Amino acid sequence: MSYETILTETRGRVGLITLNRPRAFNALNAVLIRELAQAVEAFENTPAIGALVIAGGPKAFAAGADIKEMADKSYMDCYLEDFITKGWERTAQCRKPVIAAVAGYALGGGCEIAMMCDFIIAADNALFGQPEITIGTIPGAGGTQRLVRAVGKALAMDMCLTGRQITAEEALRAGLVSRVVRTEEVVDEAVKAAETIAAMSLPIAMMVKECVNRAFEVSLAEGVRFERRMFHSTFATRDQKEGMGAFTLKRVPAWEYQ
Ligand code: DAK
Image 1: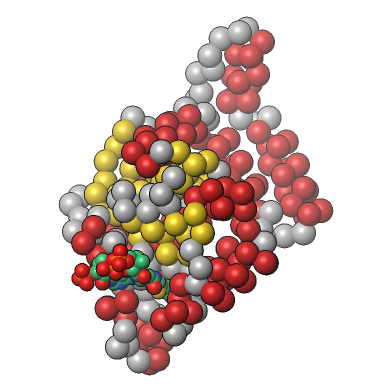
Image 2 (image 1 turned 60 degrees about the vertical axis):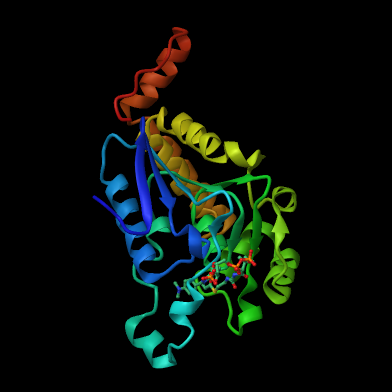
């Protein structure tokens, strides 16, 4: 499949999606959002893919929704067409693990796409922000919700109310990203992490993801109960027998499902 605003590539068992509107700092227009959703869908439906990486360019992961495209829309335009909602959540709905490789600006919708991924690996030049308030609007794709869950109220309020951008190091300290690496290494590092995940049993990795995400939706007691049920259910898989058997025999496991 050929796309206009993104590039896709398969590296081993990893599906790599690169946002590709460099002249507009990867501003997220309607075509890009649609194509991103299509690419996530395609990799999710490919059995040989075990994990995905979403990357941007060295200067910008994405500088947010395309301001030029949306500037003149009326409320009714937004409401009736359900403006950039279609396809937007597809990344968050992906059941296979997804890693964001963020270099440069991840602003507004760019930060929101990164936060829809399971974790973020940041380049040392990465800048995260929710600057919507500076252009007369508010975050519209989960920025006020996912950011507060990732970094807590104080920093989320600071970022959303002042529009301040935080560096990769600050994002690491705040728990928004899991690692910071050199800019030129960020995509390879994310692909390497995705390869590690894709080398595990796929259904078990999917269960881990589902359980961690459950923590955002339910009480601690319900989350622990959900985790317990899933944990018990792993004993119904051949991959649990294979994994524990391989450990005992000191050999590498050969998963039934990858
Ligand atoms: N939209 C359109 N074009 C953009 C852009 C954007 N967000 N960001 C950058 N560009 C374009 C610039 O217009 C410029 O294009 P030309 O003028 O050369 O044609 C080019 O990229 C380079 O930008 P600059 O000349 O401004 O470069 P600088 O290095 O001086 O500054 C910057 C880089 C990233 C700091 C600056 O461009 C900037 O502040 N950009 C805007 C950042 C921003 O405000 N982002 C938030 C947008 S609102 C929703 C889903 C998502 C959203 C809402 C709803 N639903 C599901 C309902 C998301 C909303 C947003 O993200």
